[in-house]
Amino acid sequence: MNISIIPPPDQGTSRNRIYRLIFTHDRISKPEISKALDLSLPTVIQNVRAMIEDGILRENGYLQSNGGRKAAALSCVENARYAVGLDITQRHINAVLINLRGEIIQQSRIRRGFEASQGYYRVLGDLVEQLTAECRDSVLGVGISLPGLISRDKQVLEYSHVFRISNEKCRDIAQFIPFPAQLYNDANAAGTAELWARPSIRDTFYLSISNSVGGAIFINGELYEGANQRAGEFGHMTLVDGGRLCYCGKPGCVDAYCSMKSLLDDEQESLEDFFAALNAGDKSHQARWDRYTDDLSMAVNNVRTLFDGDIIVGGYLGEQIGERIEELREKVAARNTFEGSATYIQPCAFHRSAAAVGAALVFIQQFIHSV
Ligand SMILES: [Zn+2]
Image (cartoon, rainbow, N blue to C red; front, side):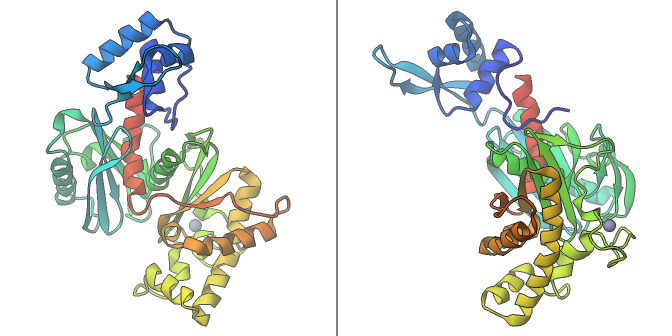
């Protein structure tokens, strides 16, 4: 499945190329479209008229042109379609309704522990009903983000260690959702949202660092899933031979050193508390942070050396790291054989809602391709 972030308008039907070109511009005129795509003006006029009738394009004032008369400007109707994203975590459900621009129109976050039951799945259906009450006829679908391995056709949660289930089907999870639904791995979904927010970045390794550690690889703007949909499972790379036991059962995995659990003291300490104490100059917090970033910098440098692309730090750590990302950059740069700086390490743009937005965006991207 192609989920290119900003698709180049050089392939496809004239209609689709025109739509995609307008999508990547705030406003553009018909003569500009004709020139940019090397299409005749009558072809552009005919396609634009049809898409205005379909309600997906609109006239949007006038553009100043060189010399001649002003040209009518065209824009996409960003609220012509919507998609819903649900991010299911161990203890919460994050739900968003987004428009074609990826803007959050409505959102909701509820505390509810996951269980594979009719009662829980009914809650998902109720959430979707609430979010879509005003726009039912314009909803493309519902993307569901989960912590686990998803089948290639996005219809089966093959395995989730966190939820202790396997082979849970989308048609069961989405049985109370009255729209097409697909499942996504949480790190892949969050990474998709991050790339959408940074269209200039093409090759990216997205690190999801929360209670567990995951990742997603994007090459030339497209998600790389691997032969078994396990590409980017960064948390289970071996960091220390015979080291701490990972929740997966193997010793020495990155997860056992780089998850938030290995940074925080216990269940009671929040990451906000940790950074507040660290930034206030507490010595014991600084010692823990130093140990933690020693380990994380090793893992990140390994990724950089293998991948040679941008690295986005996401998850709870990405939300909270702030200026402290400089310390991570310095440690990674010090380990790297080829580079003296690590400005390619970036904090995430989205907070909390990344996986929900990313799961919804997949439907938006499919729509943009199919216009
Ligand atoms: Zn592991």
